[in-house]
Length: 134
Image (cartoon, rainbow, N blue to C red; front, side, top):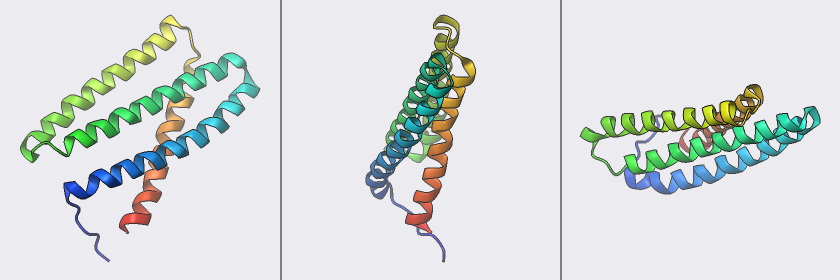
């Protein structure tokens, strides 16, 4: 069965719904990951939590860029998205540098929290897409 095409006006409400589902999944995985990291070490848990919140902030920026990108004309969209993603990337890398270099957080735990958020989001979005569009 071929999938149907979506209008930009249909995407915005679905985007909010998807963002809330992804936030709930990340909260669930974050609580489990934080519990496991507390069992390892208190400093590891603080680093994991920092990575988790950085990942959630990263996804918030993605959803915000996507939402604003829907209102841009198709001719300007490529340039709009490329500049916003580059800016977001530099901001996240600056936050990681601050956490590791200045605050001396554990890089492994920091990346574990960040990657856990990203992987949870990807898996959740696959299930949302399968449920809604296929």
